[in-house]
Amino acid sequence: MDKFETFTGVVCAVDRANIDTDALIPKEHLKSIKRTGFGSALFSDWRYNDDGSDNAEFILNQPKTQGASILVGRTNFGCGSSREHAVWAVVQQGFKVVIAPIEGDIPGFADIFRNNCAKNGILTVQLSSEQVDRIFEMTVSDEPLEATVNLEKQAISFKDVVFAFDVEPAVKEKLLQGLDDIAESLMFEDDITGFESQHNSQLPAA
Image (cartoon, rainbow, N blue to C red; front, top):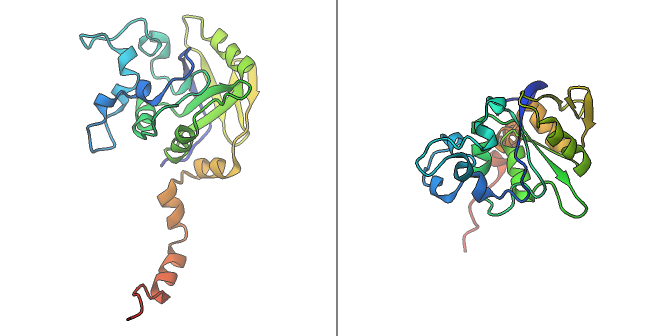
């Protein structure tokens, strides 16, 4: 997993709440046993027409979002099933950050989706509904909207507007160091090897 570094990227804002994992990657794309090739399946039901051609009205197909690396949605993003393929599709499409608002008791993200994002190098940012409304207002223009994301400072900048965000310290550290669960475990390889050399894994004879 690559280290998360400060970057400036184009914003793609999908103005829908409750975007579930079936919308992110419909079930017909889950047949592959590989972890690659899912980027083109992201939002496929909305992204493509019945004949397979691009749906020009869907935001991801518009010129101003080409090469986008910052995805913005509404509340409860990533709800539904726990399929990790949804996160793989987001990553492989090129997104590094997903932003969603908290509204009262409604979270920005479903817990499993948010955890899967952290394990795959995606930063999830929860802002207020007013802040996300402001982002959507800035995306109305036909020109691409760019933002700079600084995880170290926990800030995201849109033109002259800057929003601070919270992130769990453990998640922040893993993203900054580029550590997935396996890489984090390997940091303790010597301790694991030492334990295994002294541990008798055999059950005592009856």
